[in-house]
Image 1 (cartoon, rainbow, N blue to C red):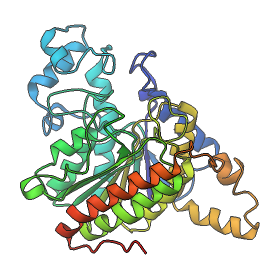
Image 2: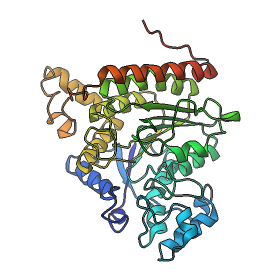
Image 3: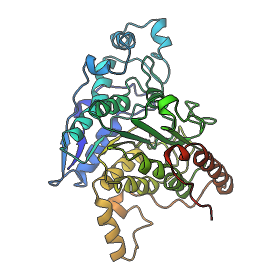
Image 4: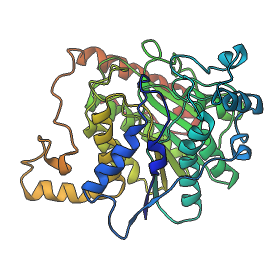
Length: 381
């Protein structure tokens, strides 16, 4: 069973229009999937998110911060709230803030409950992915960290969790939450913090104490293209995921690594996302997928719809169709029901520079993290 988590209530209110984080993307994805018949069938259903309670929020967030978030949503804002990241350009104030973000983030905990109950193999909350929120501080359009809360729900149930973040921005809030734990491994492919917010996520950040080796970062250079990105996953990330052997995988599908995103500088097509998501699916683990970044709305919606299709196993049907038709549709937007991007031929003239930087990063991870998990480096022959 594959579960899509959504409610039309999330289309109402929410972030101000001036904020690049467009909350309408989830509803647009839902309607696109509906129109294409991708939510139909005995193996798919739509589930409404359940708003997080104060007790659930306090499983990670500080009471003082939650009080400030509640007051800010009622128009009460002071200097202490500003120090908590509330009322900034990237975390503006809006009416009913706590209720709204508790419902959006609740979708990821709802997804976790569905997986724990054995009612689905895949659950996707496109309204989630708030990986920058800290226990007592907002940041990067993120107020409540649904990823941390969903992971904690699963570790409380005795599960080993792998968090794979494909957003262009580093998951600083999630990494910090689990930096000293070994029951959650955090693996992030993101644009390097030298050129993008939040300025973290370097190769040397590998965890501390019991968590040493369980935070893994692959900072990517500007201009990273499809083949290079997939190579980072296959050579660097997947061996670690397989060695960790999680009970469940949490997958953040931020679409801001797509070429043309106004807030990031990577050069991916959604074909690269589809490739990696398919590889993750074939690991045979339950998957909790979330949304995340993605500031070119149309590209983000199409990318999420494509990833849902892949998570549901439709990719195998697409591949069979491709072989039967001689692959004639592979290079067009008609492929996969109009969801796939055309192949991007441009690498912004940076292929050699990108390849060298990525190879250096992979060698660092192979030297520092692989041995902690008994993994032999991949031959460079």
